[in-house]
Length: 188
Image: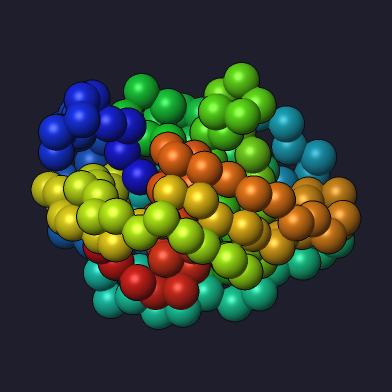
């Protein structure tokens, strides 16, 4: 999800974010290859993945992820690092945005001083305060309206494999809803 510049429907999408192939939606990384390489080699450099724009790929629901699986753990790390690289124009990402159809999201958590939080298999269990949001997405051009909730409760698993239940509000809640939609194959 894009970083919002003002209360209006405005986001920043620098042209350099998209490669020519990515803009055509054909630059999807080889499934789990970089994650596999990293998990087997102890690779520690920052791994930035290409952002997927292929709507047919993004429209498919993602599979559950296991933080104990080295491949899924490497995907989560790649996701976190790719989000950190795009921090100026993006506040959240789902694994399918980097070519991995797994239920993993990463987002900027205002409740933790804007640290990046990673969730495995997040699921909204309660929501209230519906409103109409105007959102942008790093994988899609332009902005669209989407129904969102001001307060949500989420069940998820941490990177360490711990089950958690947490409440999120306002901007952070909106980011999480957007990324969970990505995991479900729902595009704004």
